Every structure is written in C-alpha cells, then in structure tokens.
Image 1: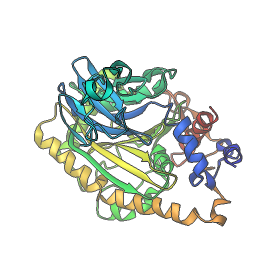
Image 2: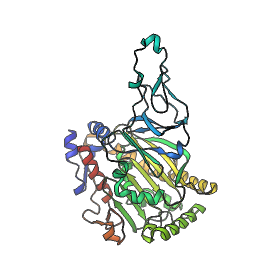
Image 3: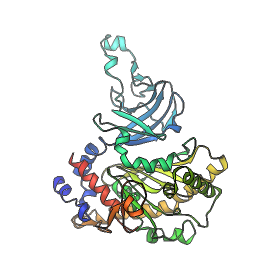
Image 4: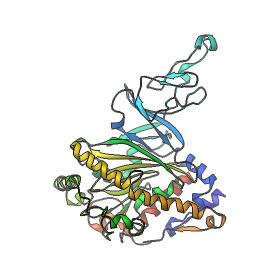
Length: 419
C-alpha cells in the first residue's frame, strides 16, 4: 500500500495524496529514508560554549545529546549501551560525564564508557569497555554556528547537502560581525498534525496570509499581503519566500531593532551589492526536511518539526539575534518573537489551529482517498537569474503567489523516499 501511495505523489502535476500524511507504513519509511539519512539540525553553538555544556535534541524519533568535549562538539544517541535508558535527562546543563540513572554506567564527554559499577565482581573483568561506547552520529558539522548531524556515513558533506541554499543562509546568518546567537532558550510545544504540513507551509505559502492571519493584519502586527517578492527553491528540497522590504516593514510595531535591520541592509548593499541587499531580511523558508526559519524586520527564529507518528509533531523554536546587538535591541527582538511566533504568539496560534484541523478533516476513510492540490503557478517558473536579472541561484515562480516551492519540496521528498 505504501508503494502505491508513493507512486501517486506527483508534484510535477501539482498532486499529493492525502494518505501520505496518515499512513503508518509511510511514516516508518520516512524515519528510515528521510530522517536517518538527511542532515538534521541539533542546536546552535552558542548553546554549548564551554567544555561540558550539553543540550538534548532529536533526530527523527531518536533522542540525542549534543555536548562539547575538549576535542570539540560531539553528538550521541541518548541511550545507555546496557539497557537503553537515557544517559542525559535534562534539556541542557554542564557536566563532567554522562551517567545512566538506571545502573550507573558512566561515559566521558567523548562517549567512551569508563565507569561500570561492580565491573570486577559482577563481570569478572570480562566486560569490553571500548566496545560499549555511546552510539555517535556518523557526521557532524556546523554552518554559521548552526549544528547539524546525520546518521548516514555515506551522506554528502553538509555544504554539499545545502548546496545553492548556502547563498541565502549567508545573507541571514553572516551579514553582521560576530554572527548570531540564541537568546531566551528553546520554546517547546506539541501539535496533532503531520510534520510535513508545517514544513511545507514555511517553504513559501504566502497564499494563506490574507485569510489565516487576517486578524494579525487588523491589529498591526504586519502589513497587508503584497504581491511583490521572491518565492525561490533550489535542488535538495530547500526553499524560501520573502516580501520585498520585509513582511512587517512599515507596520505599527516598528522597534529600534527594525531600524537596525535597515542599517544592516545598507551595509550589505555596500559590501555585496544591491541584489544581495534585496534579501535582507531573507524571509521565511525550510531546509529539508524539517528545519524552518523566519527572518523578518523585527526578529529571527528557527524551529524544528520533530515527527511523533503520522499525526503528531513536537515543535522546538529558538530566537536568534546578532551577537553584536546591544542588550536592549536583543530584548526588543525577543519580545516581538514571543508576541508573533512564540508558543502563544498570534501567528503561531493561527497556524496551529489550521494545521490541526487538516489532520482532523482528512483522517477518515473518505478523506484519505483524496489528494491535496499544489497546482498554483504550475508551468510558470523561471531561474532566479533570468526572472530578476540578478546573480542568485534557484528557481522562482513568475507570480509571487505560487506553490512552486511546495512542488520542489515533494519532488525531493519522493526521490529520498525512493532511496
């Protein structure tokens, strides 16, 4: 059945079967083919600055711990090699070792097993410690402070995986001296929907803004939706969408941080040219499979859509700021992030309600027989360089309102699921 569902995924004609979001066999295949082979975001380097600092994260449904050892960043499956209990149960902290609370097996920050209670009397000196270290990710790398890892030793490098999308990441994360840092910790909540629904929304769904977020426009959190901007996708399923000038430019909620972004745009124009400055702020996007971002004129946020079965997703969300910002501007950005896209933010509540209703409305027998429609702008796509006359990579929709990015997401998804 799962093969039939995958075979009917037809992004080139704008059609994706609804069963793709409900079938358990499809979900299990996603864990194996998508989440066990892709580069996945774990956290930001600023969260693990010193030796012994750690955070816990997840790669698909596999819990991991990211820790800074004396030799650098390491990431391990958060499971003891004895009976599988988590060796790290807190979300973050500082430690000298990772100790299992079940039987006390203890690992150093390089994942090596060095402490086993009653090793000599219970194991008769026969336990091979060097063969029982924590399971480490196959590859780990960073880009502009963002830490990624993959379980696949044969996967291309992180920079190869990101490909042409690196150009746009540079403009979001490397446009200021000192780079970016996380403030306010990580915000977490759960929703009853399939992970692909929010991931594809952040790919570039401008079409929903004037309806789903109409109340946010009315209270001045953003301007009315424009028809001018860029909706871009590149190979690998990565994409972004941005309104020219920034989605909230000129809105009632202008802050000192807004003016700072204008200064950054002017600096980028001087250093990299007017074409690059057009992409400050970069907008909204998704790095395949489940890392999304928003870079607006008032704040930046990263979020992960962690899958929890076909009908569940755990959200982790961070507020990012330029490290060089004075503290009052960092707090201004943080307040705007919480108001808009924090767990109780107006935009977040709008979206969460819709995404949950999609799962509810299509989970029955009849609903699963149907297909979602992704035909908007089909056949009306051009290379970015040709459409705008600028030296930037990717494909752009001729109209700002298009589902070209969604089709790019599912085109790559189908390739990965096919192995």
